[in-house]
Image (tube, rainbow, N blue to C red; front, side, top):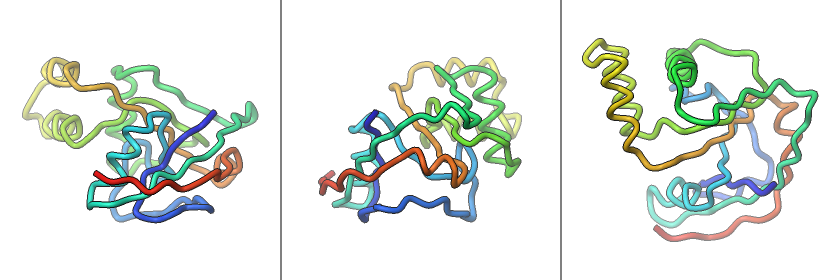
Amino acid sequence: MEIYHGSTVIVKQPEIRIEKYNKDFYFGFYCTIMEQQAIRWATRFGEGIVNVYEYEPDDSLKILKFEKMTEEWLDFIIACRSGIPHEWDIVEGPMADDTIYNYIQEFQDGKISREAFWVLAKFRYPTHQICFNTEKALGTITFKEGRKVHG
């Protein structure tokens, strides 16, 4: 399966970077099956690179997949963004983009109810992310090429 990673540089050797802020599925290397989404990631600051990888799933890995935004997905993202680590090698599912994340933050802060979150979230366009959270998980992807893209 072909997957994409948007960046400002070619990434032949993906790595898990521990950053200041936790992301949706905690620290990891994030890709998507949606090339247009990778282009948006790559061109946030102008010209960018869409890195293309071949992904070979490995049944021996611990994989968590969210088919859509659910209560379990919401609680998992809140935990990850709060800095709570998990035991999964790969996590896949919808992305909490900036707008969705703002709704999550308002829910966490008690400014909106869980029900209000779902009303707001359901009108967003589809997104996808697959996060490789361990070195063993990174072994399932092989770099194919980097393509220059413009926003």
